[in-house]
Length: 356
Image (tube, rainbow, N blue to C red; front, side, top):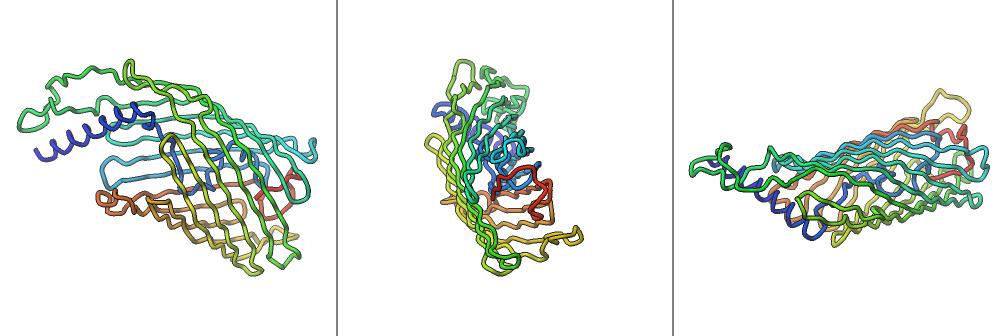
């Protein structure tokens, strides 16, 4: 009986949240990754092709709030490449594909989206590069109405699915087109000598998602527009002259009345350096650190790099009032990246444009 009451209360809460969200336009807050540097096309379309290599593939998985019932699960795949680097000499064309699926709660509210990003990459001089990008595609929102239960289905003893809900079944899935844009800048200064380990790199960018403010419609005639999302991000790579490097980064989002800031740093330790003239020894490095999401969570992070591959693991530790329900357990996130050619070799790429 207690379990039935809890289930009804939980579902009622989720539906109420949905209804309130539809009223103020914030129910459809975007997905986000704690390892934002491992999800470039999720933070800025201008980052398509903006990396040291010719092709890049990244997988992301996030499992959030598992301790309070049905968790929020997000899967993402991005693939991008740099093209026409040799023909354009001091420029290149970036192209990317970003696909994700997000499901949340007992009602399995889902969002699936596929977008294509195009960017123009320009080498300004020996150290500075800029890029501008557009990203567009299609998304679909879904909800599992079979999971809905109402207080009218409580027969005084337990939940009875045979009782009428007394509610109109107006929850419909819907799709919409989406358009985003962004700008990015990067600076790169190589190490002064082969063994000095004092390289310095920087990257910053701004992006505007949902430029077209697509209509959102889960309930019959209730319609709202998705808020545009403003993003600003920056990161540094600071060589210290030793095997230790510093990688501070920050990102800021604002969407409607909601905003989020992540600030932190990784400490990168180079275990082995890449062979300069042979393929025998591959660069291997481990980065440890974390980020703080203001007013919400501390996020310890681990990143392991080996030649063309990288795997990142992080865990959100709740600090917000929600920690009473989650016991401070936020969510785990895993990212896997592959770049071709090996970015540590510093050659064989088809473009003269170098990025962080």
